Length: 366
Ligand SMILES: [Zn+2]
Image 1 (tube, rainbow, N blue to C red):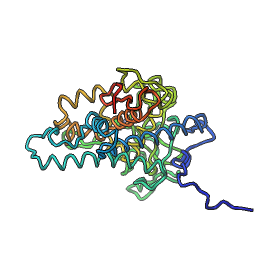
Image 2 (image 1 turned 45 degrees about the vertical axis):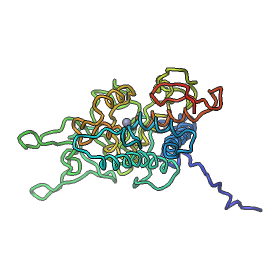
Image 3 (image 1 turned 60 degrees about the vertical axis):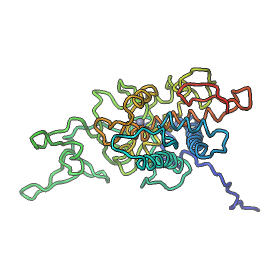
């Protein structure tokens, strides 16, 4: 009898149920039964293809002997304003050309770091995440509460406080010191007042609270804004929630490459539904605070870059260009766009490829 103990293939593909804690046998309370194995395993493999395309674009841009070199550089320039052409970089007021050289290196390093962090996670390698993240396929793993409800601890017991006379009484959620940063804020006179922006939600699955908006009488996934997905790191294990609408999203193509490119077609028209998961992975591995959703629109991004890219963005201490290098949807556009450029099935000549280097499809020679 043979035991194939050492026959593990070198490129073992990690299934989604190993990367995330997922309730596989039910759709209740955030479970994903309906979406396993498909389409979730497809979304995972398309996310792997996308991150590899993004990294290949960086490699091609750095390799002058690559046939794709010139086009890869154009992608980096148009999606991220990253270039190794020193003269093409606009200097922010007060910057010298030595700033410029540093800036160029930092730019491609930053893009590579983001993509590599996502790739590591997808390969099942250790990341900065302290616990295995949870993946939910609806928002019903959360129960909305009132700030004045009795607080529970991680073991499900009531959190107690000592009253002035020495007796014990249950604490309410808004009294728990750890939650005060969500539920209270200082007003202009320095007085502590209720922060109405957040309400507490309880997760039975995690035995923890998260603090989020109220969404009127609705929930995150049923809100009028038609949210597709969310990632949060308030709980000890980070979570990604895919809303049911993400699986039927009419703006998403059925699969990566299921739309054949035609001249002038917008990058938006070829984004697969799996891009929702790919987008959330950037929030997950780098943390939502470091990955602000600046825009989901290619034309918004281009307009902003063209008119004020090197200006400091309102409310931030970075330029718009720098912010877009942390915007998950920019990585979606970049990766899907370059993936299309790598394909050969839609071109007639060996030296022709479809490219989204300007955000719309065009046939280019390489
Ligand atoms: Zn986002």
